[in-house]
Length: 84
Length: 409
Image (cartoon, rainbow over all chains, first blue to last red; front, side, top):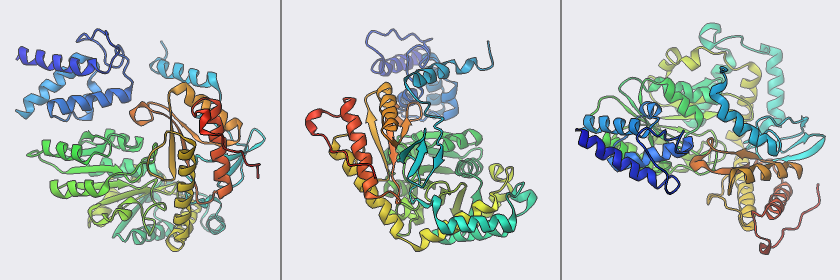
């Protein structure tokens, strides 16, 4: 399962890379809004890209709990499990 | 560490805003002269940011009805309908709204915000799914917070994305409730309601449409986008407001569903707030009668919308494609939008400054709304002031040719 988590995180980082200034280091603990500088609307748009990428819908209350890349990766992992 | 520390970011953003000029959240008019003019700092200013689409705030019949109602029934109801009872005016107004929409039932709320808050949060319970347009108004988002349902956003005005998200829910229990708006308040764009209705029918869901900005403006009878798009039969609930086209305050919801009136004893934002006072109920009743019997009003606001839209488009501004009463000019950045908005006020025209995060796609906007009460001369004057500000601040290029400034009326 760790492997699957790592893949999810890597794919999320790939999507994020296109949204932040070139060369920004994206660590798993990085706060998507706090550290990477996305405003609240940009975060919501980014989450939609992630939803499309994994073909899931992340309910709004779960998005509210997400701060870091790792949080988002865990939420995606959980939803993919529920779907399977 | 203060209880307000959590707002440090807001404070610094707000500081940056007020360093450049006026506080856009606290414009203080000395006097409102008419639906289209006010006095600000001792000078006359044209109002192009009021959502007063039909210009009925000074309608003589509405004013007279309001004054009579205060004399007859007093200044307030001092409580909610469930505790203090329903006044005859409330019941009459609800019947009138239901009839206006050709629906079985109507419920009146104390504000438009509460209409969305109440209807959406109560209808969507545990196990249900709310599917809301990502660019929904704050009242819809707040309703979602109050609801026990699971909330899913679909991409703005994207029926295919909505369909995809409904498909992902296949096999799960509960109802699906789609929420969208007739006209979106920031950019003035309308929902692709025919396609959304088709998705609703195909996937089996309920559909709520908020016609706050489209009532009185769209549709032959002024019912809004659902009427204009010919899909009223697919819309299970229409929500609206009395604070825009009807010139007062309050909200409503209408439906044909037989158990709709059950909401009166389960919908907390309806039950636990004071009901609308007689003066408001009376002016709304009069203004709704006016809309229902005078379809020139809708035609006039549409014609004015086209005039404003054409004027701004010809000047070369970056605006939306739809010529609706809301026209938003996209600004390159936040600071430019703030300077532009302040310059317009200095030159005598009031529009709305709309900044992220209140705007879709993090846009910085100068937003205008036109009224049936605007004269063509007022619109032309506003366009020339806006265009000249555009040249001065470098938003428009000089070689597009200056627009002559007509003399003040």
